[in-house]
Structures are given as C-alpha cells and as structure tokens.
Image (cartoon, rainbow, N blue to C red; front, side, top):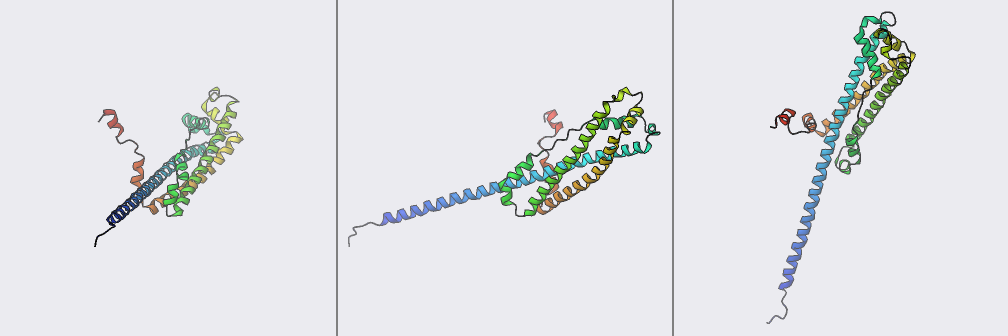
Length: 246
C-alpha cells in the first residue's frame, strides 16, 4: 500500500530534541558541579587562611606577653629595692625601666582575614560543623579583648610618662638612679605596675584559651600544621635565592 505520510522526520526530530535536552542537562550539571567544586575550594582556602591568621595572631600576642613578663620581673625587682637600695640594679637596668615607660610599641592587628571569613557565604555553606565557626568567632573575640587590654596598659604608661617628664626629662636628673627613683615613687606608676602584673595573668589565660580553640579546629578539620605553616611562605624562593638570582 502506498504511504502518503512519511513519519521518519518525527523520529529524527525526537532524537535531535532528546540529544539537545541531554546536552543541556549535562552542560548545566557539569557547570553546577564545577561551581560547587570551586566554591568548596574557596571555602577550604578561606578556612586555611583563617586558621593561619589566628596562629600568627596568637603567636604575636604570646610574644608580647613574654615581653611583658620580662619587664614585670625588672619592675618587681626595682620596687623591692625602693627607695634606698635601688642603685644596686645598676644604670643599665634602671635606664631600661625608664625606656619601657617612655617607648611605645606599634601593635598592628590584621583583620582582613577575619572580614573575609565573616562575609564568605561559601564558608558558612560548606562547613558542616557549626562548632568550628563558633570556635573561630570566639578566637577572634578573645584576640580582640587581648588587644584592648594590652593597648590599655600601654596607653596608661604613655600618659604617666608624659606627666613624669613635665617635671623634667630623665637626662635632667644628676644620675640614672635619681631619674628612676623619681619615676617609681609616683603613685600613678605604682598603680600601673600593679595593673601590669594583673594584665599578664589575664592575657595569659585568654591567649591559652584561644590557642586551645584553634588547635581543636585543626584537629576536627584534619589540617596538619605544616600545611598552615606553608601558607606563611609567601615567596616561592628563599631570600638567599632571590639575592643570588637562582
């Protein structure tokens, strides 16, 4: 029987349409997979940078606390010899006390990683353990409190020293012993020395907590310390290699 209608075109169209739909699905599926993979990678990198930043900030604060402890030992020694026997310490140690009050350490805090972590949607989306985010937030809060306390003591010392030199510069005194005695006999200096010692105890306690929280996050996330340390090596070459041009 003669065929008046040829349905072969419908088969071709169906195959072509099905192929197009499969192609679209695969294209969007692969794109979605790659997007997710890239977002996950960005989240992992952000977390790594954050933990490294916290490591560095904790290390820096611990160094400042160690320095405070060294100064505190000298202060305690001087006060135990006040006023009659302070000369036993020697001019160098007494000059160090005066310099400690008169100098101001610039303490720079890098908050860029904290801001990136706080505003990164990928991190909040891909971190399965909410406690990790909580511990990171607590670390930054503790470090902020440490910075404020450290700066508070530093500001007190600066204001007191300014008041002290209004009565004469250290070099105006006949001896270093006389200059140190004039500084240490002040009631505001004695108050600062008391606060200085208390601050060391507070800062040591806080920074120890921050250290434990950060170490716990490394353990939970399975991030080895050497990988975090490698982030700090911003140059692919060693300084000696850069100098020699190797």
